[in-house]
Length: 408
Image (cartoon, rainbow, N blue to C red; front, side):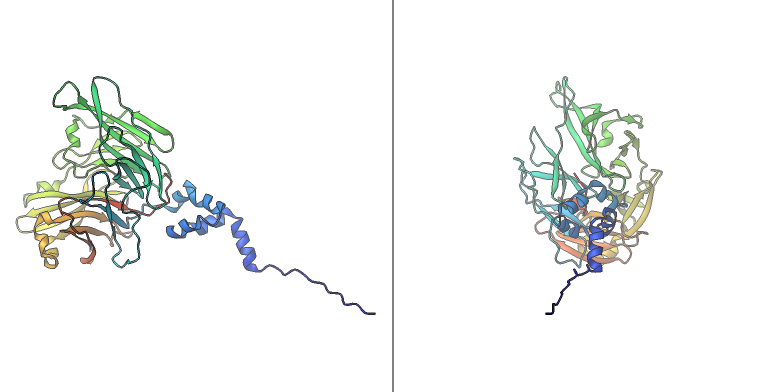
């Protein structure tokens, strides 16, 4: 009698099996791979496992992924057709070749606010939002349009007394290249109840600061390095709200003293003025834009000279020593392509974006009537981005969009 003995050996796992297992069990290695993926892929990979969700949602992951300031990739435009308590936004993609991009939202519905939600400010991927329609109990929110996450800020508290206090400006201060945390700075002013005109009591102001790291609002013992100081310095502003960059909030005044508030130092300083406006060859000049790109403060001025009309793009030095002229655009060259631009009131500067290590890919986003263009400053090339139908050129609010995984 003969027997056949069959001995079976388990198949040896393939090299790819070991590689996947090694990667899955090594958080450092997995993080290095995930950090190199685009944000859209990371949002999908959150659903792979609870472990991957935990890694990608960690505030330090977002901080490590953004070691340098990120340029905006688009704009939200607030339309004039919106109802006061239900604002709508058009999205402008800065990439003229993009055809498949889906706007993050048309209106803000991330929370059920009885009076609707509007945007106050955009800062490095996060939006500072508030109750849209005026109400005594206005709420403020921080919203990430990429991840769709939000948080509601605690209510502001005001000093008690014979005066009433109101919010003059509220600004989000967030720099993901330095910290995963953010601060919100609120400037409140005092009104005299005994005055029938309810006028502002000059020099009576208070700054409150909210920190995502430490929690509630706290009054700031602001050190004013501007003498003499007056609240008139915070009127006639170029931007609707203060602009955060370089660790400070900036209020650019059209006619008087411009200020900046160093958030960590909690000190208020004076900015240098624009010498170009005192040029004898300039008949008149007007600020068209002030904003941030590449963590630097920029201003665009339209100058009407004796022989030419042009736009000048300025950048503030990091040490606040002076404004530096970066680009000069002859409006005659633009009017050769778009004749309507010769009428100054038809031209809006929506945004200036620093591109490339040496700024060679920088561009302006312009709105002429209801058409939004991208104007590349190096090549002088125009790209039509969108048509904002029925949008009056004299009324448009816009907010930068930057993809971000920042936690709120």
